[in-house]
Image (tube, rainbow over all chains, first blue to last red; front, side, top):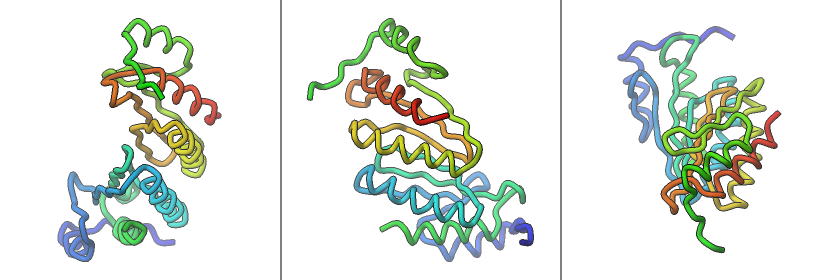
Length: 96
Length: 96
């Protein structure tokens, strides 16, 4: 597998436009997901964990009850790569 | 079920002495768990999620790869209660 290449700011911006509700802050692709309760929030996290492990690309994320905050970047590339946008797209499909 | 009562600082300190590796910082009972990899970290989180839901007492927590940081307090009581120490004790038993 080729190592992911860090996207230019312009390329990242273009890719961001393909996602809904995500932002780029402090160099990371970020979103907060809101659910009805903890069971739904953790069910989402479980699905996202399977995506993360299958992509070997893991988020920085936190949870408080019905909220899940996700921050993505590619450590090996020192910034955002296609992997982050792919992961964002895939886990977005797991949320309502 | 009786509402949990906020523990005095002295009582919290006494209870803290019964736990290993936890600290009280910023009024919250805190610990970072380290695992070998993401699968082990998320497996722990899954177990802890079941404990949380069964106790109806949910953590503030974050994960990056093999690290899980947990912060506990009882929102309804405005501080630490027996619930936090009970939850801490139970999830500690899920970690290696």
